[in-house]
Each structure stands twice: as structure tokens, then as C-alpha cells.
Length: 120
Length: 114
Image (tube, rainbow over all chains, first blue to last red; front, top):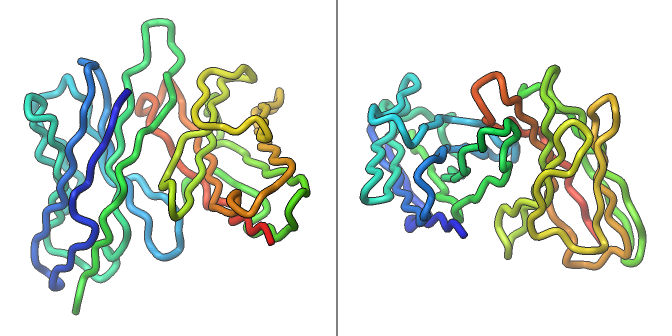
């Protein structure tokens, strides 16, 4: 079974600064995906960024980037130039890569979440 | 807007009752997933359907059941409701062909059991 751990229950940052959210995971799988989802006060779950385990290059999406360390089973999210709209709960999630048969295993395993507050 | 729709947005009911939550996936997505988010359990995977067939099962109670219809919409049925079933229920969908298996979430249904 996979486990995902987010050790920072809460973080805060000033607007325009950079913040890094931590995530570690435990798995015996070699092929998998990692995700960061954002849940603002509206409670909608919004995909922030995704990383394939077989890719050595770290994923980036505009102000969001990850530091993926496969051997250390670490997957941190860096938010640059923080904005007030980044205030949300952030979830790290793991999913096994689907088999050659075509259909996914489906299960996303989530961490406990980190509440990020961006202050003006 | 993720393209995944869920109805109703809010549901208030009493213990012992039965409710049905509905989900329509994004256009072209064949997989539908159900998740439960509660304060004590966090976000937990319940069940997955792919093109009408059950594909994976998580921590879904026997009082809960789901199905996916030929038009690919899905329903989650919760029966003999207990106070502890109060939670936010999310539906997500994905495609094996676009951004492989990335799940996009609907806005959720907030269930309150009184």
C-alpha cells in the first residue's frame, strides 16, 4: 500500500515571496504519477501540477514547480511570486501508473494537506 | 471549470435515509471516480468505474453502492445513513488518451446527515 505524508499542516507566506510545500511518499512501485491539487475556500479540487516518475526533469507550470527526488521519495511544490489567490489547502497525491491493458488503477492516495495562507 | 458536473451541491437528510449523488464526467472521459472528504478521514478513494464496469474499489462501505450508465454518467447511492457519513463527496473523471489518467474533479456534493 502507498502512503503520502505532508508534514506541514500550515504554512504562511507574504505576497510575492516564494514558498515550498513538502511531501514524501512510500511505495514499492517503480512507475507512478505524483500530483499536487489545490483546494481553495470554494472547496473545488484543482489540479496544480503533475509529474511522471519515469521523467527525471522536474515539472513546471508557470509559477509552480516541483522538486522530484525519486530515490528519496520526495515531491515538494515550490510556488514563486505568491499571490493572494494561492491561499488554499494543498494536497499531494500518488497514483500507480496503469498497466499495459489500458485502464487505470484509478486510486489517488492523498496526503493530509497543507493549509497555505498568502498575506498581503 | 473542470468540465465535471455534480448534483446536487448540497444535501441535508436524516439518519437512516437513502440518497443518490449524481456525476457527469468531462466529455470523452470514460473513467469516473468517487472520493469522500471528511474531517477525520481526509480524502479517501471510494470506487472507480471505467466505461460502465467497476475497476477499482477503495474504502467503500457496504451501505454505499455506485454504478456508471451507458451515457457514462455515474451515481453514488448511500443508504442507511449515519451521522458519520456527513462529508464532501467528489466525483472525478479521466481519460486514458488525454494527459493520461489525470483526474479532474467536480465541485463536490456536501452531504449533511442530521
